[in-house]
Length: 514
Image (cartoon, rainbow, N blue to C red; front, side):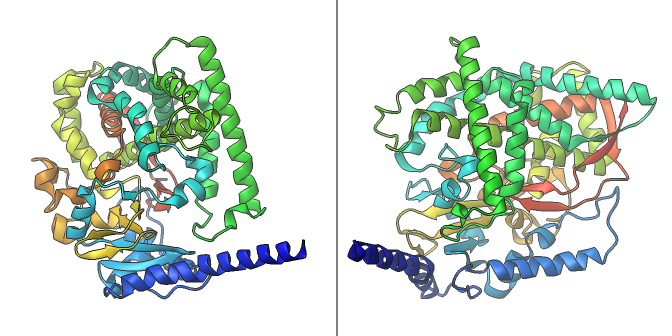
């Protein structure tokens, strides 16, 4: 008995030593031998302390300056939201290595290497394991985080529901939801007899939630409101938790307790929605019904891991669709309102196009395809304010890019916002809002088109890309046809990284009915 206990302790100590010291050092050494440098990591936390120090210094400098109010003077926000990366790029070059806990990250802003990674379709490059572990309560092992045959199995179910032909059939539903939001604006504006101030990001979050609920789950936002609210709360809590420190997610501290509580509530609520869906829509072939059908097969499916139960298969994929389908689209729409409100000349051009193509009627898919100016505005906004901060992949096997051997276990990180503002790719006006750079398409807007990454790269490009673009066009076209808007004097321009790129204080606009 004592011998067994001693043996277990020895194994535990050996595992801890290898996790914190041995494996990270081996991976880093393989990169350093190829001339790749980076800041020296500490034993337990990697470079997390240094990241915090750099960020705090920037925040301290910002606090000494007067806050911008009602005006957007510049778009070079990565210098305040991701200052550690810019500092290390200056110090170590466009390819460097750093660590968060025991996770070794190869940060890449070299354009040619980004192109190679973008064109890579090998399953040897997959989603990092920390997404399903450290971020597991939010994302689980759904399509956003899984790899290999299990990912391919989920993709086969979900991808066809977001093909362009399917999405075209959802335009009327998107318009109906948007018009309900605009009716509430009209009612409030009439009560105020004049201009109305709207915290548009909050309204857009509800709207996007309603659209994804109706499109994929056959229900309205009202039914899923508690789920969306809990997911948003979970996102906020998890943005405060560091990743890469082995065992940290199991500690019964304040943040973890709140995460566990929210995770349990969300899982229960999703299963309740599923139960209700079965009772009311048993024969309706929406995405949720397809997930339920596949969930019934999980026990017999060779591509599904043994530890994935039917309930877990359902919950994880629903959470992925709820989160990816509503949060990132709502944020992108909010940034579009911010840019259109900041540049009245582009708002006027987009409105003229909308009125010429569809008047004050709700648009159809063909009308949306012809809205070239609105498309350019959206593309430029996604360039300057991509909702997702990073493309992150893990080398699941040893792999090679631009002559660099990336060892199995290393995470490859592409900071999208930094790449989207590189002058050697976009020109000396890279930090300026210039939608007409996309007048001849993405291929002519950037020296290396693969460096435009608002929807990710390679085989793991966002499945909902068509859905998101269609939704953004529907929302913006309907608003432009009915209202003019400008930034409210209460707006404070402060993009921050909290798992996604958020407007820290929201987006306040003043709307006036045309």
